[in-house]
Image (cartoon, rainbow, N blue to C red; front, side):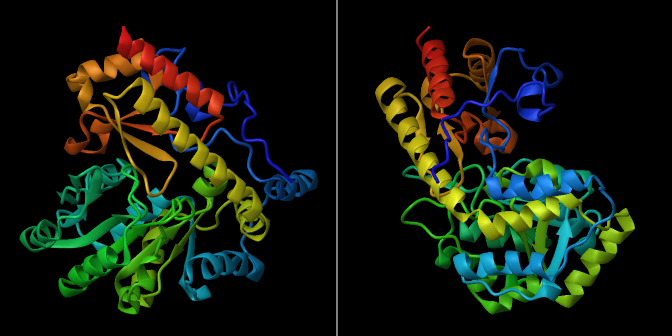
Length: 390
């Protein structure tokens, strides 16, 4: 069947963060939101059908997963990423950010260094600071419209700051890089050399554009299994973030034991029933829906690129290799950060993610979520054009 991603669904008054909390978050009521990373599309029918069975049953008690759940997840990563996982590696959590926070607590001590690569997903910085760890940054470098890793700086920061843990964003949010085998191998070699553990956030792995391929970190070098925690989830892929279920793979038994011990200390055990069943249904029957979604998102990306080139040449698209979160270079407008935000929010009436929240090097940029019907995307870009022209 064909899925209709052009359908505009009214999400207002559904208590969704994206549409119903503008004023609570300091935004004008009438802003058009393209910020938080969820999609304005209904999820795959196989998921809602499975959840409907739970609703009809009408009992929402304590729930855990059976072998069929692991098999669905494992088969997905085997088939699409050539990664064979062991059932013992799997730890289920309510989210990837939660898992990152647990890993920071389990694998580092207060005051120790945790490395990231800004501009990067802003909760990385928050969980480092909120857990009283030292934030160590090795900036990505923009060269000819493409972000790259400064490996010399990366290793120097590890040595100088006595870094114990590295947070890898792969594919990278917000700059859209899909790291190559060589890049991941060099990262791995440096971390192995200096005994640095890696938490790899691979939540966007299913969104990679033609010509690129996502590599799950341990597939690069099996030695990386001993130092890595791989964070995955169906939430971005199938629009299930509110169901709060993530699959965290920890091959090293000692790291896994430390992680589980810390999670138990927090007081968390089973994830919710609807999340478990939605995840299993997604991986068992959602592939055709996902393929059509990716085709539609590619069309949205093409539309955005063409619109900017023809109507807003001052704003440059950083060509993404993956994700549906697009990084826009707005420095050509020549506006200080505060004036840029005023233009976006109060003149264009758009709710985007300011690049500044991703780190100092994100100033002058904006992140826009293109996972919406094209008519909404067109309206957003027309609002931006009108504001810039005025």
